[in-house]
Image 1 (tube, helix red, strand yellow):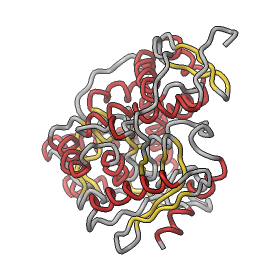
Image 2 (cartoon, one colour):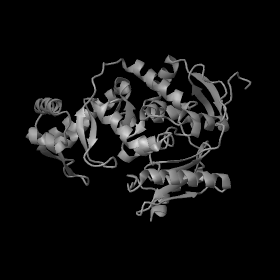
Image 3 (cartoon, helix red, strand yellow):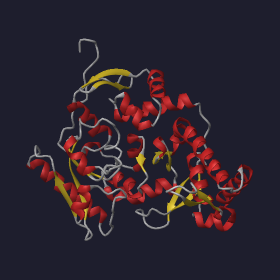
Image 4 (cartoon, helix red, strand yellow):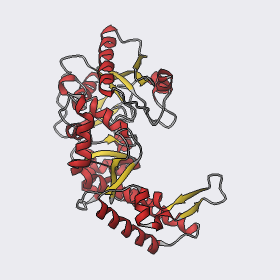
Length: 393
């Protein structure tokens, strides 16, 4: 470039994605911890997404469930907690302090204030009462190790207290102290999601004490998290980073400056990589295909997605709230979607007309791999998208 910045084209961005997100065959991981570290975080709103995302990136997908459960519930090397954009993710446990300080503190203060305000409006008990209940709940969890909301309420009956929310409004409802307080404690980094009540696809879960972690300086934690994000997803634009983190643009710029991020040129404008990470990256030696689940971190990692997702496919692959459904990938770009039918069959469709027979054969092999791993397990995305609904019918 005439301004001295290196230009990173679409082909190289797709190569980086293939290798750093462990999607190309030779880049696949041996353990869930490697997957989580490579991606920084796995979306945890839909429990099945975590396991499907791990399985797509392991050399041996048969390890996905037992090894992920080991990491989450036995070794505790992974933890499921609130993170960026007030969303639940699965992180390496060592990132707990970074995530909490960089993204959780501001949201946590807002959530607690909102709960106290809603309770006060409804004439419910005050902040001192809530503090007593909170201390009691944390003591119960420390004693039990993990517990469901119902089990916690059995030991601390005040959790069953209810209050009217938005009285007189069209969206009036009755909230329980249990649901609201546990949510606040989760955002505050005091409790985390524990083992589910059923199988790995279950949305019902137990609560557990959060891993102990030091309190970090917020600005330093933001710089740390942003650097990890760029290592995984760079180059990224300022808009990408603002969207992924949920921070203000001033916070993104401060963190970019703190890590000495390097500007590069992208087709859509200025992008950023970590200092020293602008050197060319070669594409994987072999073509690759992948079937990724809804809310997969690769599909959701950037706000500006035209370099890997044809705009015409968005209405088929996203719901109205912007949640991505199951996607079919070929050599670093989304070319279609997939679904599981009630009888267990994995069905897929390549919607990009520019894709040839080689892609079809590779996708079919990945569908067979996925179907063999799932066996009798049935998965339905929490957020249904038009193509997924059509294919699964």
